[in-house]
Amino acid sequence: MSVGKKGPFRADHVGSFLRPQALKEAREAYQNADISLEDLRAVEDKEIEKLVQKQKEIGLSSVTDGEFRRKWWHLDFIQSLNGIKTFDIDASGLFHGAMKKATVYAVDSKVSFPEDHPFLDHFAFLHDLAGDHTAKITIPGPNMIFYSGMINSDVYAENPAYPSLSEAAKDISQTYRDAIHAFYNAGCRYLQLDDTSWGALFSEDFREKIKAKGYDPDELMKIFADITIEALADKPDDMAVTLHICRGNFKSNWLYQGDYEPIAKELFSRVNVDAFFLEFDSDRAGDFSPLRFINKQKVVLGLVTTKTAELEDKEMVKKRVAEATEYVPLEQLCLSPQCGFASTEEGNLITEEDQWNKLRHVVDIAADIWK
Image 1: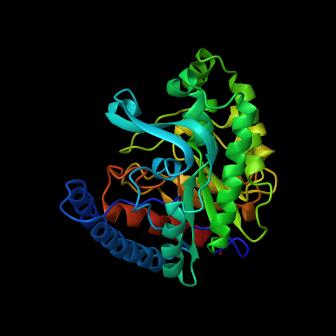
Image 2: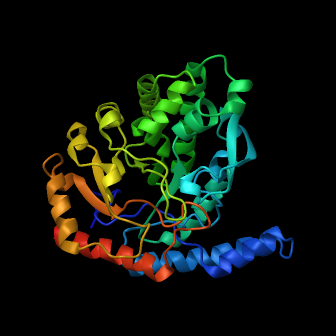
C-alpha cells in the first residue's frame, strides 16, 4: 500500500518501539560495567533483527530499527554533531511531572555534520535487514537545534556561539544538507525529521515563554521554515524526506497543546517536504481545517494514539479520514499512529502486545480505505 515508489505509505508509523526486556537488561548491565560495549551492540543487533521481522510480518511497508540504540529520540543524534555540548537538568516540571531529570544540550561552537556520525552505521545495519522493504531512518529536525539549543537555552544566552541568529541558521541548514546526502549515499531513500519544536509555536503557554525571552514567535516561525527549506535545497529526487510534528511523548504524557492553525500557513504552504506526519488523536490537536494550506505534500494522519492501549473504533477512524478529504485529496493521505511508542527508552505505558495491536489496526484500516 504505497504512495508511488517511495514513502510515505498508506499504513505507516512514526518509528520508535518499546524496548524489549533483553535490551533493557543489557543496557543496565553496560551502565554497571558488567558487559562490554560490544556485548551491548550484539544484543541491540539481535533485538533489531527480531523487530524488523515483526514489522514485515504485520504488513508494514517501511521498517525502522525502533530507535533501539538510543536513549532519547533526539539527543543521541544531536550530541554526536559538531558544536554541541550536553548537561543534565532537573526536569520535574515537564510532561506533567512524569519526567524528573533530563539531559539537554546547547550550541557551543560552529555546528556541522561529522562524516563518522554513528547513525550512518545504524542505518547501514537496518538497510541490510530491510530486504525488499523500505528502511526508514528517523532523526530530529533542524529546529530542534535552533530552538532547544539556542532560543530556549539559558546556557546559550549566557555564552552565544554565533554573532547572529541568521549565521547560526545558515550552519544548521548546511548541517542537515550534509546529513541528508550522507544518508542518501548510505542507501537511504526514506528519511524522517522529527521536529517537535514547532509545537512551541502553536502552544499559547510556550509562545508566552518565547516572548519572555525577548523573541517574537511569529518571526521565529519564518526562520523555522527557512531553516528547513534550506536544509532540503538539494535533496535527491528519489529520496523521501518527511516531517513529523507532535505535542510531545514521554511515558504516555504530552508537552504541548493547541491546534496547527498558528503555524499552518508558514509551515504547510512553504516547507517542501514530501509529507507531514501530523498528530490528530486528541482534542489537543484541533480539527483538520489547517490542512487547507497543504500543497502537493502527502499528509500522514496520526489518528491512532500510542499513549493508551484501547483500540480506536475502526469506523470512526474511517470517518475522520473522510473529514480530512474536505481539505486534502484522499490520494494524498495516509494513516499512522500519532507518535512513536517509545520516544525515550522508558517507553509509553502500554505493553508490547498493545503496540503490535495498534499497528495491525492501522494496517487493517488503511487496507479498507485504500482498496
